[in-house]
Length: 225
Image 1 (cartoon, helix red, strand yellow):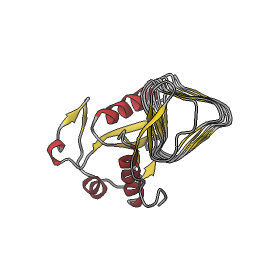
Image 2 (cartoon, helix red, strand yellow):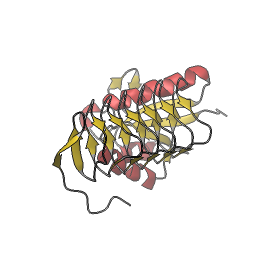
Image 3 (spheres, helix red, strand yellow):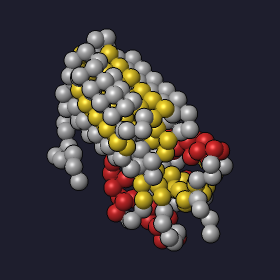
């Protein structure tokens, strides 16, 4: 019997290919995953091959064709969409899998939820708390005592310094920095190359050095299941 886990990547776009890369990197160190391919509801992609792996169909197609446990990671960068897709996959009984690139530096005492992506050359410092389906992207860092809520994301090169709080579906753009003891609210966005010296409230879009609120968008009625 194979000891590898059958892995499906949900989403056959750009971040899905990044997830594939991560899984392959892990397999180079120790064979861990049987990568089955991509799952995507876009019918135009059905049967196509992306980076050497097939698009198996939508979630319902895959659920009806596979037997036994199915491990998955959502390869979708948009936080709210990733949340909705992850919940749907879990409702099918699929198992969310956290992927940590072998090059990542991850402290032993962190809390790391299911379904997370911890990218190439990323860093998560001691006592950080990372929720479910969080993206800590390539060459980004999460400081000590920081909390990142479910479905949040720090894009490539982002820096979340110590004692920072990032709310559910909060987003830090590439090379953005959050000063210690500050917060980025739920569904808030800190733009690329911005520096947050003050708290960014829920639903706000902030950018610049120092970051200033440019606009706000409506919050969903509930950010919990």
